[in-house]
Structure formats: structure tokens, C-alpha cells
Length: 88
Image 1: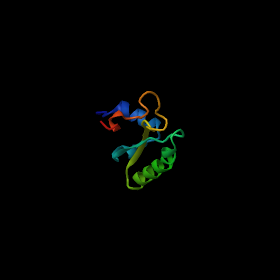
Image 2: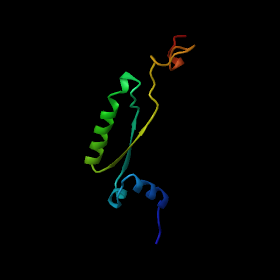
Image 3: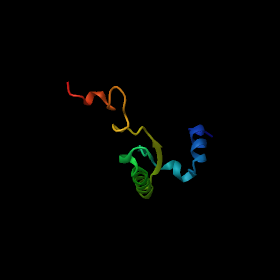
Image 4: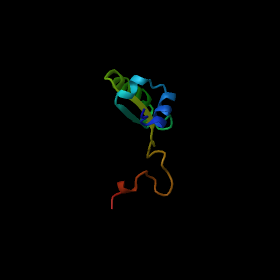
């Protein structure tokens, strides 16, 4: 018997995946929800909606977070989050 990706499958089982899930596409939902950035507070609900649609379409949705950038919070000597936004 050949066991393919046994380690990954063991970890995924701990997240609630079942045998039938392993035959479905696993789709990542990348979300920058945070309660600190006003423009990102709605993303929790949006991420949940996207995940529900993935599941309804036969996939397995797995969500993970990424950085939430906000110019209003990015202060300091640069006073902006991305310096390439400055006019030359």
C-alpha cells in the first residue's frame, strides 16, 4: 500500500477534513481581515461568503490571513505604507 502525503493528510484531518474531501480541490481564501483597519473590518464576512461558495461548488475552502496595510496607521518618518506612492 502506498501512502501519498500522509503527513499533510494527518494535519488536514485535524482541521476537520474527511476522506471525501481529499478528492476535491483545496482552495485557499486569503483574507486581510482585522479590527484595526476600518477598510478591512468587513472582510471576515466576505471571506466566509467566499468559503461558503467554494464549498457549495464542490471544493474545500481553507482560509488564512495576510497583512492588512493602512496608510492611516503607517506613520513615522515616511508617513506612508508604500514609498513608491510618492511623486518623484
